[in-house]
Amino acid sequence: MDDIVDWSELPIELWPKIGKSLDNHADVVRFRSVCESWRSSIPPSLPNSPSFPMQIPQPINQSIDTVLNQATVFIIEPSLGASNLEPLAPSSKGWLIKVEESKNHAFALLSPISDRKILYPHATSSSMSWNLLNYRVIELCKSYTIHSRLSATVSKVAFFPNSPWIGVEDSVACCIFLEGKLGFMRHGDEKWTLVDDRNFFYDDVIVFKSQFYVTDKWGTISWVDTSSLKLVQFSPPLCGFGNKKHLVESCGSLYVVDRFYESEPPRRRNYVGRADRDAAVEFFKVYKLDEEWGTWVDVKNLGGRAFVLGNSCSFSISAKEITGYQENCIYFTDIFDVRMYNLEDRSIMAIDFDPCIDKSLCSHSSWLRIGGQNQLRNN
Image (cartoon, rainbow, N blue to C red; front, side, top):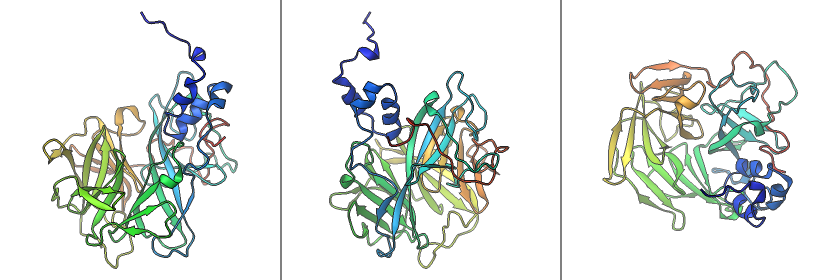
């Protein structure tokens, strides 16, 4: 039987190598929280790693001040004897939360589905504090939104790579304009560049296997060659007849969720609203790409998972492990606010804007500070 070495006896030269293999800020913070020696072995991040909010060019008018905001979706799992985290609902399961950092290192708690801010409990005016060192914190994904004085011009934006050990000069962004155009920007560019000036019908963009993947309204998936700014077709057209396609990564596979409206919403040219928020959903269809055969598979069951089609990112979760979520269901927003679609019986029901929140505690403030000195903060 192999001898088990206590972590405190590991050679000092291994600590930086272990720490720098962690590719998200939350894990780096927890690593540095173990002890003083581990904390001193690595910095919180490279000095020039991506930092948010990030100043970027406005997609339409470059003279307008514009920032790219980052939010992170976490799963928080309780540990034995840990107290409840208000305003999260008491549960033995995990919680799904989304946090957005501001310049002063405070965090806003958002709904992972609608991006609406979670309100303070008990109408308190002071910030709350969570000591997440007593919990297991798993980073699920990141999302990005563009904010400026100009009305919304972008429906979706993706940013990559984003790591404490990556210089921001190596990062790039890809976006879907409201009218369906596909935009691209390297850090430091003075304006966005159109990737494809012939197709104005792109629906979604995500980072999948360290590449930007996009889908158009016909369900054709392509990946973006960031060196040449060319699109490389990855899948045959889905030819689904829905109104909007969503890309979702689940358990290492790529899915397309086809959204069908009760009536055709305004779309693309000369329309400045969000069709996915201004129309009522009738049903969804889900398809999985069989990469070996290059064909689409009609999915009838999500295998114990739930899909979340958020306003700024889409992802999947193991429903049985998360408070308030049901398996084989799709969570989304439309004209009726936040709703849930059951893929098995095709029913739709309205739900609370965040299933993990204890509704008896919410009130009228909006800011929440998360973590103590060593948790989810830049030290």
